[in-house]
Amino acid sequence: MNLNKVFETMSMEEEEVPFNLPDLPQYSAVERNKMSIIGRTLNPECQRMKDLILDMPRKWQVYDRVRGVALSPTMFQFIFKYEHDLEEVLRKRVWTFNEWSIVIDRWMEKPPDDYLKYLLVWVQLRNIPVNHYTEEAITAFGGFAGEVDVVAFDPSKAQSQDYVRVRVFFDVSRPVRKTKVINLPGGGSVTLRYDFERIQKRCYHCQRLTHDKDKCPLLIQERKDQAAERRKKMMIEKQKRELMIQPDDPLFGVLRDEQVGLDEATGRRKINPEVLQNMREYLLAAEGGEKRVREERVKTSVLDLENDPVGQRNFLRLEPAPLVISEVDKDKGRTFDYGPKAVESDDERTKQEKRSQLVIREPQMTVSVPCRARNKGYEEATDFFECSTGFSSGYADANSSGTSKMKVGRRYRSPKRLRRFKAKISNLEEGEDGEKSVGEAEEKGSAKRRAEVVAGSFKKIARRSNSKVVPNGGLPNQ
Image (cartoon, rainbow, N blue to C red; front, side):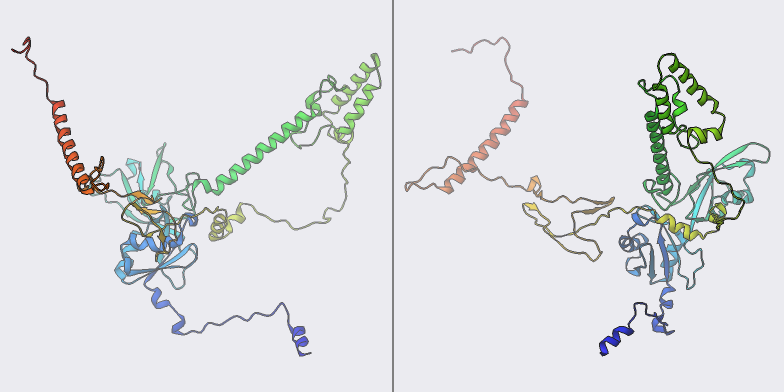
């Protein structure tokens, strides 16, 4: 009875009470985070987080003076031991992993809304008009790449390069601008070129840093639209072929194909199939002169309705007339506006998340490390172990350009100068007791090999030396 009462009091919708985290020092990592940086990957499917945590300390050359923490599939943290190492990493700012850029910044206890949204990068401006080599003009030109932070320009010194550098805060959700057309005050225009330093891969369709060209959402949507347009055209052509009047049709020569086809504006049939069938029966019911009269009537009736939309709807398509009511607000509902204004008011981070949802996952490659191999005969990597780097077992070897498939079963041979020739045991003589003398055979074999070596050397010398023959010498004296 008590168990039944417990079951009756139980409910699937139990109220969840939130947990209040105590405000105690042991629950806070603020002091440790002061010596750390936070970052995120821009192309998660090409930037594996496990590999990034292990590889970035090598690029920064800090090794045992930093510790990486994977916060999420796209977010990471590196805690430094010394302040100068942290400042040196932040000074260069633009870092790449697997040839795709990452965004890093110093840790903040309460980060702003645009945290890790901007990349501090140097941009080279080329083809600047000679009459506008001023600090203000260069700052305005650099503003098209991002918010200008530093302008590296000194008009009092010689300039050996054909560009001017500016450092900007680049919004990673925007495309990387390559050119910009500038209209000059005195007339004419010039095209500026922008080259972003230390940025490697990008999408060569939309010029963004978040995906490759094969995974570009704009290109995928464009391909889908093109495929839908092709399918639509094919369906229209197929329906047109089906609606064409065949030579054995009674309406052949009476109506044209464009009169019985599909309306390109609405996609509906111009003449209802039932009306066409009635026309055929009307023509087949007469012969001779009466048939020609009926053919002329059908042709005239269709021509008279070409400029009469109401008549076409009532007599050719057999569509009912619309109902006209006086209640202008009948069943009125709310309208939703999804135009450009609504899109511009959305949060940029939300749009970035929507674009990241369109990324297609690819299988990822693992790397293995052989832990034992034989040195004699053939090298065979028979045992593997899970390394401390987090890689899993496989058949791959690391090299300067990445990873490649490791060759297993290669023959090991010593250098030629260290090889020893083994004597060939052949033609062994049998002893008195009928057994072969191995010692004598080895001695004969070694002697034979030495003789062959000597003979071979003489043979080579004989090939190189020319034969000496006395001309017209005749036979020797007896």
